[in-house]
Image 1 (cartoon, one colour):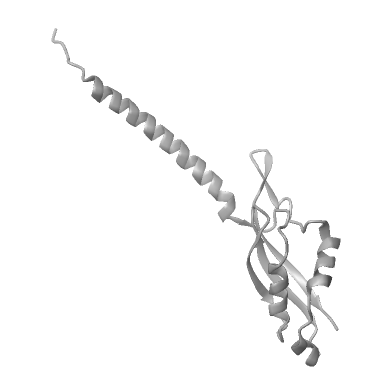
Image 2 (tube, one colour):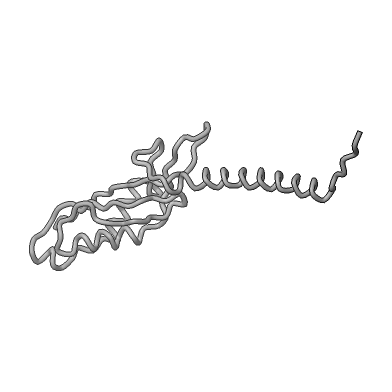
Length: 146
């Protein structure tokens, strides 16, 4: 019976390599699952985002912050500007833009006001039997009337 010589260093390196591969695979799966909710945009979600203090606080903020543009007053322009944005998982707002506007400075004013809002309470989606914050697209109508 022939004796086989075992290289201990080679065996240890192979075991370390297997362990490293397993750790790397687990880390990659964790990274992909944690990135999912941040990149996917939900509309609607199981729990919609909300302005801190609720709808009444949002209306008060809009009344106090919104300035009717002089050009719109001059031309008698009134109506609703629909602003779309994404409420991020931390409540911050991104990708703010006008979905449907009325012009004469009202669109720009609506964007200015939305960008000046405090962080919202993020929306949530049920995943693995618990609610987690997710990115949600939101459309906010802002009414301009003289």
